[in-house]
Length: 230
Image 1: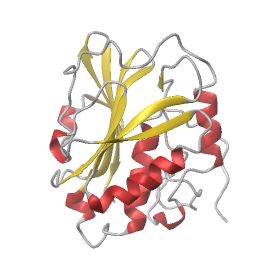
Image 2 (image 1 turned 180 degrees about the horizontal axis):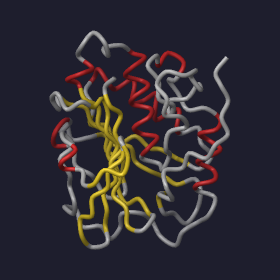
Image 3 (image 1 turned 135 degrees about the vertical axis):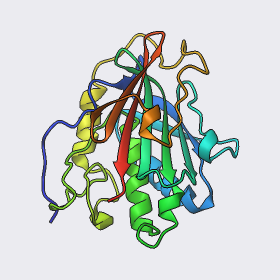
């Protein structure tokens, strides 16, 4: 049986602004066919939250290194990012505590190797990176203890950590319990703070082993969450 946790795992106070729940967010599909099913499954899983209404949006076929953040949307991409040391990166653009746009990237340089070229690893990382884009942190950051049955749990064996669990949905309900005056992303300049995802040097200062913050001007910050290769 998976272990049970009840600790808060909000990613700071970050959330998408909205005037009613559920918030409607477009999840842009800029992944290749190998990843399409994993993205669809992750979007469907997170869409079970009572505060999220996730709408699939077709990408422009510009997956990989041109995965630019789009105002008011979550852009999801895969690509051969090189020997960066990371499997996945989630980035959010925030003004104050409001997320204005977000990206999730998965690195095919590692997913094309025997160690990670499995459906379990692909689903686990895709689910976790998208979860970060809604304001969730990890439930647990020990790779070698018992799985919690959620993709927001670090693990070396992702077989039972493929999807969100009830605690993830409860945490999202807490994060989005209050309402805001406006929608996210409306006043963010389109080119403000695009960050090269390939190396930590582009991510700003390290707050933790897997968390980076960059000030990009105009009261905007880019927050980067990383899942490293073991």
